[in-house]
Image (cartoon, rainbow, N blue to C red):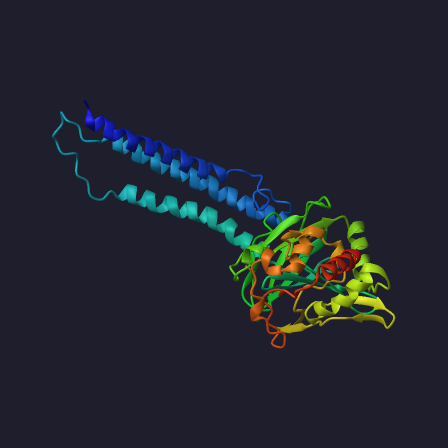
Amino acid sequence: MKPTQRNREPAGRFRVVALVAVLGLSLAACSGSGPQTALNPEGPIADSINDLWQLVFIMATVVFIIVQGGLFYAMGRFRERKDDESEPVQLHGNTKLEIAWTIIPVVILASIGYPIVRGIFDVRTIPEGPDVLQVQVTGHQWWWEFEYVDLVGDDGRTLVTANELYIPERTDVNLTMTSADVIHSFWVPVLAGKRDVVPNRVTNLTLHANNATPPDQPHPGQCAEYCGLAHADMRFKVHVRTQADFDNWVEGQLAPAAEPTEGAAADGYAAFTTCIACHNATVAGSDGVEDVGPVRTLEVDGVTFTSSLAPDLTHFGSRMTFGAGTFENDREHLARWLANPVDLKPMRPELNDIEAGRILGMPNFNLSDEDIDNLITLLEGWK
Ligand code: CUA
C-alpha cells in the first residue's frame, strides 16, 4: 500500500515518546518538595540567594521568549514561498539596530550583575558580636566534626559533636571551617549557599535559621564537593532549636557520659576498648572525668581545630542518625554497622594508618553478636 507511511509511523511515535520523556524530566525539576531544595529558604541568607535565583530566572525567561518568538516569527514570515522566486532584500549593517542590541544586553547584564555582586559580599560578610554562635567545622573523609569553641564545660572541655549540628533559631552562626584531608563543601540548601572546606585553609560560612525545626525533621545537609568513595554519604543534619531548648541541649552535651558499672552496658564498655583507638568519649568513672580515646587537633592559619580520627561518641545516643547523617540511629542499623561497616557505607578502612592520622572508614572488627549487642546498649545509653 503506502510503504513510506508505514515507515514513518515508528519514527513519529519515537518523537512523541522522546518529547514526553524530556517534558517529564524537565517538569520533575519543578517539584518543590525535595528535601534538598534551595527554593524553600528557611533564613535570610538563603532568602537572598533564592531572590537572586528568581530574578535571573525571570529575566532569562523573558529573554528566551522574546528571542525564540522573534526567531519563529522570522521563520514563518520570511520563509521561501513556491510562487515567489524573488530574492529578499539584502542588508548589511544597520547602525541603529546594532547600537540597540549592544545596549540592551549591557543593561540586562548590569541589572543582574549589580544585585549578584552585592549579594556575594552580603553572604560572605562574617557576622561579629557577642550574640554570634561560633562553630568550628572539620571535614573528614567521610564525616563532619563540629566544635562549639565558646561553649566550655566545668572541666574545661569545649562542646564537640559530629554530623548533627544544633543551632538556636534567629541567631547568626559563624562556621569557621577546614578539612583534615581533601576538599569538601558544606551545604545546607535551605539555610545558605555552598562553601568549600579546604585543607590548610580556613573558610567561613554564615547560617541563620528563622524557625526551630521539629525534633524529627532537621534540615538536611550534604557534602557538595566530590571527595571520594563515600562522598554521597557525607551528610549531616542541622537541628534548629528555640534558645531555651538549645541551652538545654548544650547543658546535656557538656556533661560527661557515665561509666556503666553493671549489666550489658558494662560488658559493652569492656568491648569499647576496641573503639577508642579512633573514637573519643568523655567518661565520668571511678578515676574522675577523662577522655578515654584520642582527641587530636589541627592548626590552620592560627586557628586550632579539634580534628579527631573518628566521631566523638560521648552523646551518641542523643543523635538521630549515624554514619554521617546517613542511617537511622536504631538497633537494627547499628547491629549491621558493627557487624561490618563497609556493608552499609562504601569506605576503604584497609588504607587506614592511625599513626599518620589517615582514616578512611571503620574496619570490620569481627565482633561477636554478644559484643555487638552490648556495645549498642552502651552507646544508646549515652544520651
Ligand atoms: Cu566530602 Cu564530598
